[in-house]
Image (cartoon, rainbow, N blue to C red; front, side):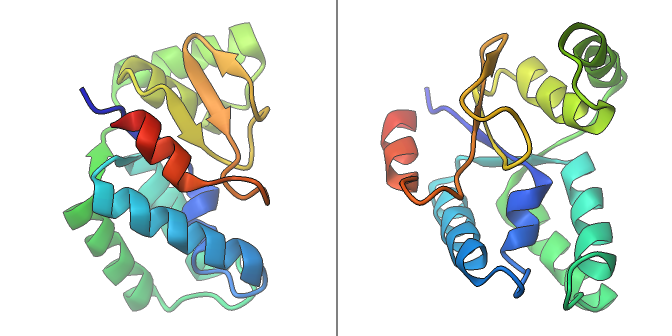
Length: 153
């Protein structure tokens, strides 16, 4: 069985954020390798957050048409998980039990309920494991995506 890796919005955004060239390069490399391996997973929440962020919140925003095309590419080449009522309820439990912010809790809940053991994100308590879900910052200098692909196979 191949282990999937959930990718948080910030990693997708960095691939298009020219104000952070090193993070942009690393994020693009990670996303390419996850797409080629078939191990990358995102959610409908991540897609929505990505669109809003890259069209409004980065220093050189994408045109809506360009961001739309990126979403189409992700839809065609990545596994996309829906946010369900069960995920919303689990996210509320994550807020209650682990003091996550709600949107981060929903990322965790999506991974947790879909039995995905790793979330690549810059936003969580890196290295922490919550109910079997590990938070990994793939933008650190010593991170090697190949290590994760090797472990996942």
